[in-house]
Image (cartoon, rainbow, N blue to C red):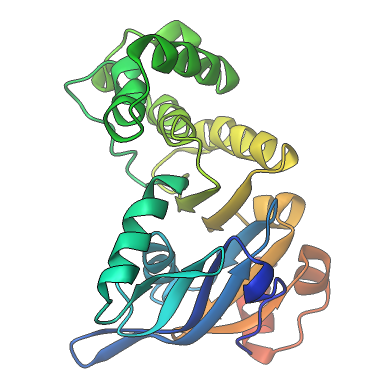
Length: 258
């Protein structure tokens, strides 16, 4: 079942028949997924199902072996891209924010430096404007007191909140999360999930690869279940968690009831 609730024509970002191969191994097998404005989509599924690879393709970090990625109607990634596609990708890349599992903060920069660097270098924002934005975002994620700290002095949860602020500083149209809490202990997971929940309520368009079933159930507008490189089932949280239609999804969910 490779359908998507937001039509590709009306979507912010979409994968269309995306295939990804690494050598002889097919990781994604013809995936269609469209993300509508303000939609919070959670991708769940067993390890090795292709979740992160799909996210990386949609973040323009991996090129599809076949199919394409479309942003607001323009092709921005495909196998053997034309010069027009490469140009379109360069234009939209700053509008796709990415939050990684391992935070990926620059260790030699302070919290403030991490947040203002990309807006100044990529968007040409003045330092004064970048600092004002950074301070507002640090307050938003509850990290204003750590603006002059270096990443090594922060907990994992604090680093991830800074990483979210850094992604938001680029004013992206969509924010992608790759298992943002998997490296954190339960208490630190909660503080990161609360920030993400706030973003969803504010209407940020988000695509989240996660093992956090509670977050997917309570916050997502759409849940995508993947297995063996394909979308097996997709629907609202209520429909997916309470009335799954495929045997594979039922088996996956049953393990959380044991």
